[in-house]
Image 1: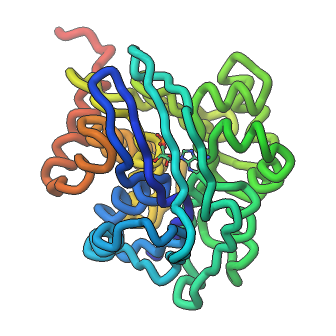
Image 2 (image 1 turned 180 degrees about the horizontal axis):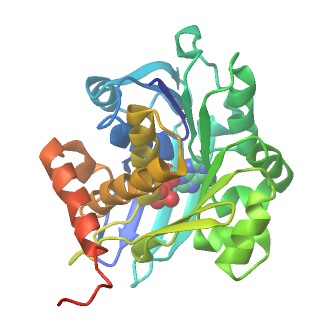
Length: 308
Ligand code: AMP
């Protein structure tokens, strides 16, 4: 089923306890598109970059089945740049630099060939731009999933609430859920956030897994305990890419299937953190993905029946 992805395509500079990178490619839509292309093709991308963004990386996306007709290249401007530093626990980070550059004036043009898409993934981006994409679609998609972050809660709160009210699934991390709701308890936070509009809420808890809420129902997916986590950047976006990619490929938006989608998203995110940036996501084999999903199944598979 057709998938439209919007979000940042960026340069990132990362610092973790294991090392530092200079500018490497990143961005929410980059991680989402690469990941969802393992499940469904084409991935129709709407984004903007400056003339400094490497053409070979655009080609790399195209070769993976990403349709870049909706990727604007502003030759005389600079790409979005983000820099972050992870603390020793690798579960929390601080933003060092956010330079919006081309994102500051981004007008998301939706190509005619993207109309009628059935699945829409609003990756991290100014909430006003996310809302414009919804408004520019002539037909409402079957499912709209949105990701966002504290940056937008701080500087565009009113627009963020307007966009959240228009989506079906919101995906944020635990810190962001607390900030958005003003509640410490994630259960209370989930109730308040679902009252803002989304019928489904995903709260990501980094190495502690993810929760899926829908009405009174809750599903918990663990994160895979890994020996080494090199760089968590993009794990949230990769999770989102796996989640929506799986839903689009199975074309089933029931709560039961969303549970499977959460497990697929978690499995993909567990690969992402194994190397810096997008590197690990570029060479996955189908069997590796299936084996990783199976590891999740085994991780939480137990019986409460005593052996006789
Ligand atoms: P994640 O680790 O999944 O939360 O996402 C990391 C990605 O988000 C990085 O590749 C950044 O380029 C991108 N990013 C960081 N801040 C923003 C922002 N304010 N708007 C859009 N994308 C951002």
